[in-house]
Image (tube, rainbow, N blue to C red; front, side, top):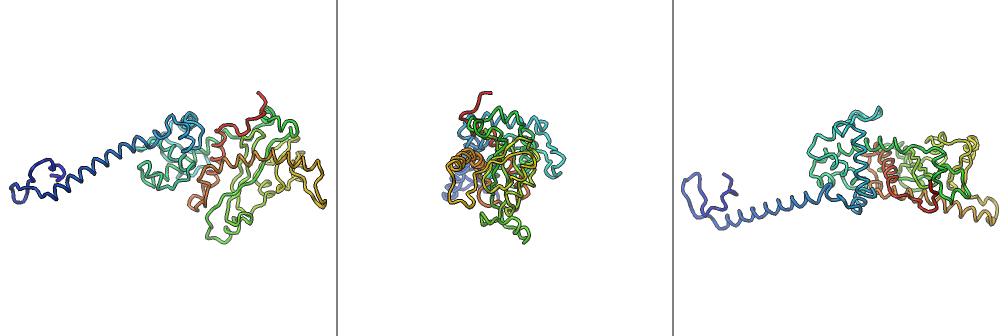
Length: 363
């Protein structure tokens, strides 16, 4: 018989002796305190259940934006339903041919519902939470959450990659803002590079390949391209921070997507004009002063114009960095997922409100 079950009785039955005696006041006070604590725990558990998980963001666009980075709860539901439709209602996700077998796991046969799993993954991407923190928030084990995170990340990456292809020329033209159409109508893509910090590897070779002299830290470097309207249209694989802008442009494959007559906008660090000329394309970058004492008036205006238009790629990358999992130093334990994490965060920003909203022609 549980002692807590007898706290309502005026006496305590002693099993070994077989008679009743007056209860010890200290014992009764202890039992009553334990009962109060148990009731408080139950109450807190119920309140926590009501305020956690999907209930935290349901029909609340502000909370949805804060916890997931998606603009509205409707967009959150749309993305979840899209992923479900593409993965046989989440019964079993097998992945594509490039997905390791260990990542092709079941995601619905657990007490945490698929939509809660999806939210838990989005919260880590957006808020940069520790695995233990997210696992505690959703009352699951660390190992279970780690499995969810890897599986969902592979799924989200695979499905968003399909709908975020490099857009054809006619779409670029139809959505081009007047600010580009007036002066740089052939612009196909605006490119820039960005870096994220990673933990220093034990291998001296890897340390050398990932050390960025610009950031003075071990980093991974990505090339990001956007359309003139501000949509991220290209994201490279992650490269060691040692790589130059020219080298990453050559190796990432973006040049193969260009067509004759296209032009690329970039900053002065992209010395790729010769590469573009071979493909009958042009490069628009701020002019170099060279041996001249100062820029001409036309060069000053050209520098200002390109800077005003190039700022959109920096704003776009700034949106990506709002997914705080990319802040700080990325541990080596998730380094193999770093490219998928960065690319996924890039493509998720394309679901946000348009970056360039002024002067866009009506379709």
